[in-house]
Amino acid sequence: MLQLSTIQNNKEEVLARLAVKNFDGTKIIDEVLAFDAERKKAQASLDNTLAKANSISKEIGQLMAQKKSDEAEAKKKETASLKEEAKKYEDQKTHFEKVLHDLLVRVPNLPHTSVPQGKTPEDNKVVRQGGEEPKLDGSAKPHWDLASEYHLINFEIGNKVTGAGFPFYVGKGAKLQRALISFFLDRAIAAGYVEYQPPLLVNAETGYGTGQLPDKDGQMYFVNEDGYYLIPTAEVPVTNIYRDVMLKEEDFPVKMCAYSQCFRREAGSYGKDVRGLNRLHQFDKVEIVRLEKPENSYLVLEEMVAHVEGLLKSLGLQYRILQLCGGDMSFASALTYDFEVYSAAQKKWLEVSSVSNFETFQSNRMKLRYKDKNGKIHLAHTLNGSALALPRIVAALLENNQKPDGIHIPEALRNYTGFDLISRQ
Image (tube, rainbow, N blue to C red; front, side, top):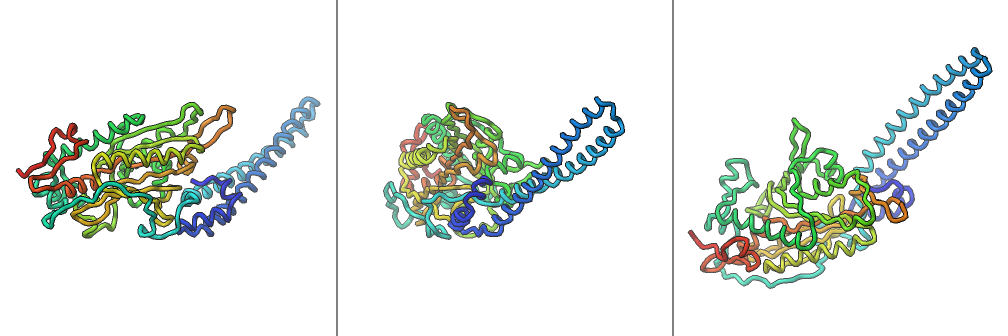
């Protein structure tokens, strides 16, 4: 959530930067400022009324001491009337604060000044590329055919038991999943991240804290009876560990990682581009989360990008890193780098990670603050990244490593899988 002071002091800049995200903020920003003015008026009236009541209360004490009981009783009635008036102003203030909050949570984060203009993924900027393009012959198959041929993933059973987008992983397919999770977690822990195993259900306050609500309400699975949401990413529960927390300057850096299953409705997703593992409603992911002092956060963002890049290098995958344009960024992000790996069989790039800096957007919603050495209070910066999401990594590994004798496992994974080749059964 944007700080109200940012909007008050920099209205034109706020509107210009929101426009980079293709968000026309004119109407809602004007409403924010109008309701803030009404809130201030109600607050001023409340303060004046309470001050009058307090002053009269002192007079009552003096009148009672002078045994002027009739005058004291009249003043008591006046005080009672002022308290009723104060209650009216208090209710007005509370109403305007709620309206103001409901408006502010609908305003996206401001993009960093380096974010390029653009509306679609085609406008994203390629920062760098790495790895070698796999050399496959004309008989190369996409991962959904390989998964069936090698008995690794069963999409049909998942469709029967649950529905499309909920596959069963079988045998070495299941073990490959487990191996990747362990590999990613071990790399994160070696980099200094503390592992958490979070709950898969969160309350609405948690969803608001990281910005999924109200923006992504329709994309999240909701349990009506209990009012809980299935998490779309471990970022949500893990970052909210520090909701309503006051840190000390010496507590930084805070480095957390977590494996979780992730649930996304992805309404309206159909066709060839979402076939197989390309888009699922339930999938596995390892997430890294950082809490940082503002002056360090963009250096840390580059460190997190390097961490994810190192994972892809270890897996021998061809990849590219893109800085997202304003129109392709998430609601809460200030700057995002996406990672894509090349699928040689599908002849397309597949997104496997987003690494983002949210600056103070999430911490303002969560009231995540810290005290510096002088006792001054600041909002922390929050960052997170997929390190990594499994489905498209598995798709690329299966497709890019298919050989006549089977599917070869990258050397970095062999101690985790216990096998170096998936052969036809």
